[in-house]
Length: 107
Image 1: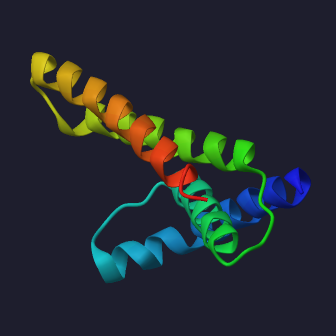
Image 2: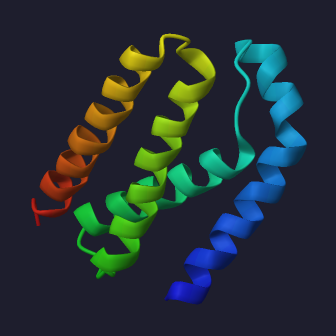
């Protein structure tokens, strides 16, 4: 299963690289192709898990953790106040980790 997941990320990344200019024209939002590929992959896996398919929760947790870390790094670009940034990044990691734990614990 891991190879299908990695292939999914690769294919979605290529797709988002080619579509991101079009997405920007419609939404006026810049997207990170890699972030979108990883997020869409774990969202799909989470939905499949919800509908009863056997999904490896380890890879799901890894992908979700990558998204939490990506959100923390995104804050670096948006927040200028260093103290506020440090606290916000810390709480993003803490609450993001808790959210992943709780979501995966709902089986």
